[in-house]
Image (cartoon, rainbow, N blue to C red; front, top):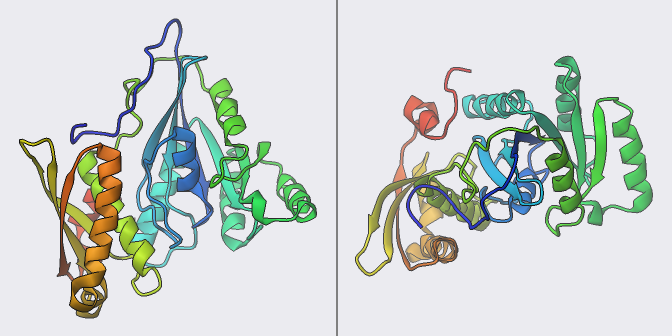
Length: 313
């Protein structure tokens, strides 16, 4: 695998092809990235229990051989009431992804129900006269009576063409959801080669994998403002790859948290990220992590550009 994009094997199409964009929107931690990974069939977006893990839009590409269809899912940041610049940039990215899509699916955490963030999204969809598909996620955590009541309440807004009850984590109902999108995308040429499942370069995905592990190991201690950049990607003669990355934090105290006592925490983060990268790349990975303090990185235009976010929103 090269440092270009995640790929998988697929049979070339015969006859007419179909292609369309589907935006996955929802409140933070509704399960959007988990759903995209499930629909695509491989990991293209990082997942963690921490809110706002996804910062910019990520494309996940699903293929259907029967209909020669390519469904391009747009995984968007969680939508909520933003206050900081980076929050405004992420919410802007989410709505931009939705505005560009042929179809929109609103993912609602069935356990949380119709909270303030979900209402905000529904009102925005109504205001812009956009219809959507409703995907009630985490149904395995909710009693049937409560689930039916929530479904009726959401359906009452009159903007949903269809309702799916799913568990993105377990895969329940996701195959039906994918078939529904396949049936709706229009005829047309594919936007990506049939063996590509994401538009994300491997350098960026590698950084995201490490950022995910930081969140998973330190989500109670570290704010989500930590960033990871891949500084070097060196292909070695023995087929392995050396990856050097920098973890940026805003304060010295945060640096100490990431490093841990005697460097144990950063070692754990690096080991877990390396194992996942080796599984993904199917070869040996030498991962080197460095931690730096950059107090004002959240106000630096270049970082927003690197993350695919608008700075002036």
